[in-house]
Structure formats: C-alpha cells, structure tokens
Amino acid sequence: MMLWFFRIFVIAASPAIVYLQISRTPAGAAIGLAVGLVIVGAEILIEDLNLLTMISAMLGGALGIIMAKLLDYIVFQIGNDALYAAWDKYSLLRYFALGALGAVVAVKKFPEFDQLDKDLAKMGRRRGADMKILDAGSIIDGRIVDVCDTHFLSGSLIVPRFVLHDLQVLADSEDAFKRARGRRGLDILARLQENGEVPVKIMDRDPNAPDTDAKLVRLARDLGAKLVTTDFNLNKAAMLEGVVCLNVNDLSTALKPVVLPGEAMPIFVMKDGKEKDQGVGYLDDGTMVVIEDGRRWIGKRIDIAVTSILQTSAGRMIFGKSRGEKA
Image (cartoon, rainbow, N blue to C red):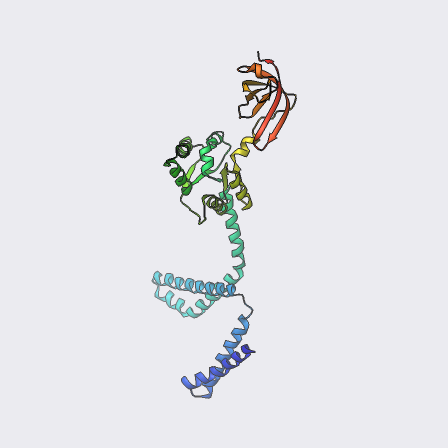
C-alpha cells in the first residue's frame, strides 16, 4: 500500500515541480506528468530485477560509453577533418548504441562469471597439486631427503616462513634436545636445496590462524596443495579440512617388506629377549624380530623360519624359530 502512495506522490509531484520552477504552462505540467510516469514505470520494471544484474548493466553501459569515447579519440588523432566531421555527426547514436550494447552484453554474460570463478579455482587447485608444503616435523625427520632423491616426489616443496621461524627458534633454544632438533631441521633444508632434485621455495604467506598447525592446514587448503608431515594429529586435522596429507610414517609402513608365516629369512641376533631363550634382532627398517630359541645365537647371523606376525599400534613384530647359523 505504501508503495502505491509513493507512486501517486511521484506522479502528482513531478508536474507540480515543473510547473512551479520551469514552465507555468499546460505544456510544462504535461512534461512533468510524463517525467513522473517514466519514473514510476522504471520503478515497476526494475522491481523484479536482480541487484547484481542492474549493477552489471550499469557497468557494461559505462564501459560501452568509454569505448565510444576512445574511438572518438582515435578518429581525432587521424587528423582528417572531413572524416572527423562525418564521424562526429553520429556521436549521439554511437554513444547510445555502444552503451546499450555494453549493458546487454554485461547482463547476458554475467551468469558466466560464476563459472569462470569456478574454472579459475580448479586451475589453481591443479597448479597447487604440484606443491607439497613441509611442516617442521617432516623436515626434522629427514627422510624427506631420501624420498626426493628417489624421484618419488614431483612439483615443488614449499616451506612457509613461519615454519622456518619455528626451526630457528628451536635452533636457538637453551634446551640441548630442542637445539639439536632445530639445527638438524635447518641442515636438512640446506641438503634439500643443495640436492636440487625437487625445487624448494620459501613462502612468505602467513594465514591468520591461532597456531602453526592451523596455519599449515589453511595454507594448503587455500593453495590446493598437499601437506607433508609426520604428525598424526595434524594428519587427521588436515583430512577433516579436505586437505590431502602425505604422512612420511604411512609411506614408511607401506614400504616395509612383506613377510609371510613359514618364510625363511636371515637375521642378526643382537640381544636376548624378555622370555627364556629368546633372542632379538632387527630388520633394516627397524622391525623387531623375536627368535624363540635365539639366545644362544647372540652376536651371530642366522636363518629363521617366520612363525607369526603381530601388528600393534607401536609397529610390527615378527616371531620366528632359528634354523641354525647362516653359512
């Protein structure tokens, strides 16, 4: 109801304004009435129009007028007076045509901006897929150097500036253990850069997040990159955020040699076990091997027959029986 009152007020006020301020004639009142009707008609037409559509139409029309002005300048620079006079004769039509064309093109193509944004995001994710962001734990761990040397990683390794700062803080720590870890991390970074198998880049981008783990996850998500870590909790948090996480520990577990019950294998018996007559040895990957009657073979390499395999949260254990000293 209020809207109709407003429309009636505009239709009544427009001729009154023209009659009182411009022309006190019936023709002036008629012109004012026409202006009021145009205003109300425009208001009715744009009522159902989307605001973004209106803005895009205005921007498109403005760009069309700018293009017409640019064409005017180009023709003027040619320096042909006859050509410029003929060109200027149709200036009003030219400005109207290019302005209307710009508005129409902008309105028609505006829905494609959303798809363009999605395409650009996909392109960014594809580019980011070649990026691997390293956290402090994976750098200090050191195995990333061996993985790079074997050419299993492609793309580039990204070390955020805040991770480098964390390593420097550790390296300057008064605690000997932390200091050793920090210096090892810096040494590993130096080795990665010297090897050159995979490019290593320091990135200054620092997301607004409360802690380093949150910054790493947000940075990886924004770049569409993968996160390299040895931290179990960071791995889980990254998965919840939809970030692909490359856990060096998972890779190590997956690459452990497959051993089946009944299989024979050589092992060096290092020490005695917890139970009577047990001996203990280790595979090259650190897997503990318990030999039931291996105490008497301590300090020697023997052949054993695998009897069972136990997978625990701490890792894998292999149990076997000795088959005698290895020749």
